[in-house]
Image (cartoon, rainbow, N blue to C red; front, side, top):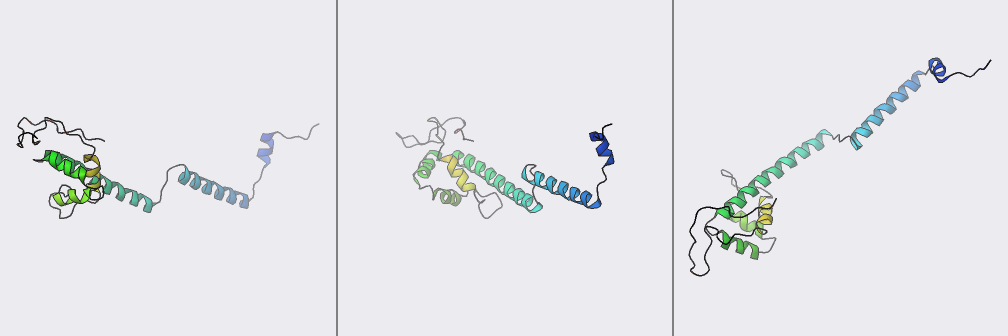
Length: 156
């Protein structure tokens, strides 16, 4: 007769101690936490609060930047101002936009932080169409007339 037990018989006969149960539980908890934070995308409360604050700040700056671009391009001398903006150095463009008030929300006294930089980045890439209303004519120095048409394509 053989004294070899099957796996199920060994499993049925196994009597773990309390210490083994405790260490197994601790290992399972530590493993779950490590997997959750490393691969599961878990974050602490403070990190989540910081992420929410940053997202709100960035979305406010993006909104103000989009309003700035629209107001800039709808201005009476958009072509002239755009040419002046492109001539400015990259670090002084934002102050030019802030001084004009294009990044300040109605009712606020200060411009939205970061919006002028975003606005300037987009505006320097804009190419105005030749038949844009409000564009100064080089030959006569007068404003061209016409119906409102989209001023430019804003890059995303």
